[in-house]
Image (tube, rainbow, N blue to C red; front, side, top):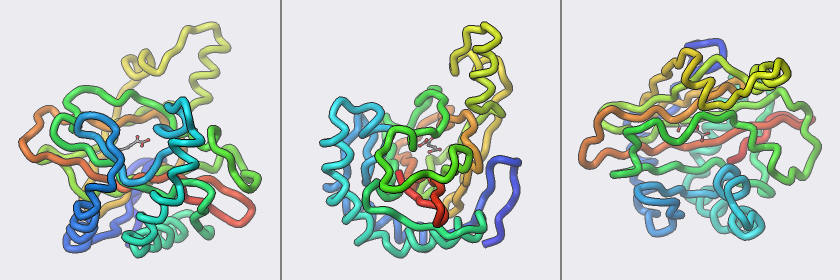
Amino acid sequence: MDPLLVTPTIVDVDLLDDGEAADIYARLEALRPRWLSRGEGFATLGVATYLDVMASERPEETYYARLPEQNGLIRTHFGDLLEKVAAALSALLGAPTRYEEAVALPGFHVFESAGVSTQSWPNQHFDLQHRSLRWPFPLASEDDLVSFTLAIALPRYGGALEFWNVVEADVARLQRLGRTVTMELLGNTKPVRRHEYRVGRMSVQLAPIMHRIAAVPVRYPGDQRITLQGHGVRDSGGWVLYW
Ligand SMILES: O=C(O)CCC(=O)C(=O)O
């Protein structure tokens, strides 16, 4: 489980072998009736702050009220995977990691058929959703933030993260200089880089850089893009992993 340094801000950890990833895939498939439909070819197992708080008119219903059921499913069926993720992140970050029932456990993004994007969608963003949640403890720092994505199944063409060496402070600095800055504009003017995923490998963003899901140039029949997605914040006891 040696971390491979790919860039200063994204680190890869090999977490599952092919058989283990196939087992997680099969368990998730068996839970298909419990997935939350998010649109054509897009579902999640688990609630997510960006979808169920930030993009929701009724976060009490869509996020907080669904936590017990969705967290329960994930804990029951993927408790061993969560333990592996927590142990790997603890080793990587050099501090204890834990989960909190007051917020969502890391969950699964499932994109299939038309949901496997062939365009630059969703848009680039920073993972700063911790600001939209009610935390049952004070956060230790606004600077200690991580995001992680573990590929379980990828389209035939592959899967990747597109990212830019741009952080939120860069946007604020340009705005202070009087520039009209949008993430779309930055995405079109700054060089975009690509971080390839591999099934069973967890890619960890060590800071909130501007990023988006990479589209595939061609979508093949049966393509699926399935990942375990989560983020981390710090409190005085260590890292809390959530979605
Ligand atoms: O699936 C990925 O590659 C990353 C997803 C992402 O950007 C996010 O959930 O914030």
